[in-house]
Length: 100
Image (tube, rainbow, N blue to C red; front, side, top):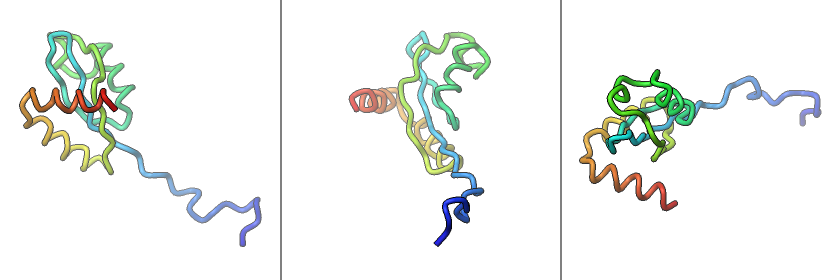
């Protein structure tokens, strides 16, 4: 048994960083898919015009979908799958996320 002043053995091991796949709606109605370890911060970058060239023609309006992934490689895999979907399927993801 450890005393209260002793740290547990795993106290210095950082927790695994969460990664997310996300969708942002542009002003023209299109959906942008990306990954980030902080989708809210990344969305703010998109709104400021420093996130992705995608938003040069139509500004980012809303973060409409986020999905937590196990790690960065899982987020990249999920991003590829979502990008292959038709817009109607992406809209279903958005609708299911907003109804939760």
